[in-house]
Amino acid sequence: AVVSTQSGHYGRAVTPDREQVPCQNYVRAALRRANYMYVFGSTMFFKYYYTNKRPLLQAGYPKFIENHFPNFTDFSAVVNDPYNKKRVYFLVHDTVYAWVLGGKRDTLELGQLEAKKNRKARKMMKVFKTGNTMDGAVKFDSNSIFLFGNNGEVGKWYRRKEEGKSVGKYEVVDKWDYFGAEDDGIKAVTDSYFNNYAIFFKLDSYFFLRKSDGRIPKKFRRAIDSDFDKLSICDVVAPLSDPYPESLDPDQALEDEESVD
Image (cartoon, rainbow, N blue to C red; front, side):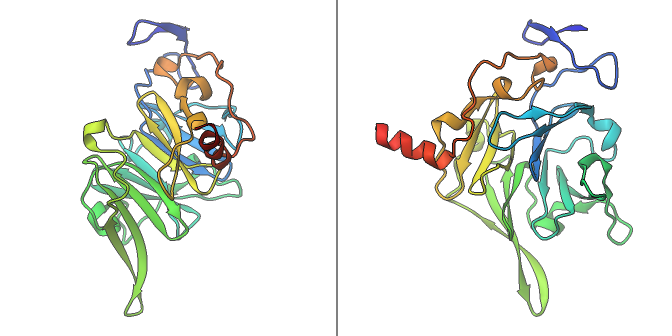
C-alpha cells in the first residue's frame, strides 16, 4: 500500500495488523529491555535489537498499541522499575500503571497490569511524589528514576529507609535543565547500550547524552529516520544512508572531538 504523509511525501506503509496504518506523528515513549528497545509512536510500537550497531527491527513489528495495552493507550512515558526487574511503569498524565512482565523472554506486550489493593491505577503523587505530567522517564541507576516534566522540570525519584520502611522521595535536579519547556522539551528518553549514557528523542532526531555531565557526542546525534527502520511519519521506509558509528564508544567519540578541537 502507498500512503500520503502529512508533509506530502509518499512511502510504503507497514501493514502487520490491518490494511490501513495510521500516521506515526511522533515518538512519544521508549523503553530499553536488555538488548532490545521498544519505541512507541502515536498508534504503533516497534521493537529493535539495539546494541552498538544500527537498530534492527524485529520480525512481527510494528504492532498496534491499542491491541496490547488497551487500558492506557494515551501514556506519555514508560520506565523500568530500578527495584524490580519485572516491573515497568506507564505514566498517563497524573496516573501510573504498573505492568509486570512474565515468562522467560520478558516480552513487554505479554505482561499484565499489577493491582494494588484491587486498584490497577495509582496517582503520580502517590507513587513518584510529584504531580507533574511527564514527557519522559528513565532508570538513571540501580536506585533511582529521572523524571522529565512537560514544564521543563527534571526530578529524581528514589527510595530510602525511614523508621524501617522503604519510602519514596522526589527531588528536583537543577543541573539537569538541558531541556526547558521553551525548547520544545523532549519526546522520549530511555537507557542506552552504554551504562553511562541515556538516549533522548527530540523532534526528528535522537542523541546520546552522558549522565555525568550532559555532554553529547556529535557522532551520536542522529536523525531518527536514518537509523530506525520504518519508524517515520506514516511509516515511510527511509533510506539508511548515514553510516552508523558501529563499535564506537561514545566516550571515545568525545575524546576524539576534544583532540580535534
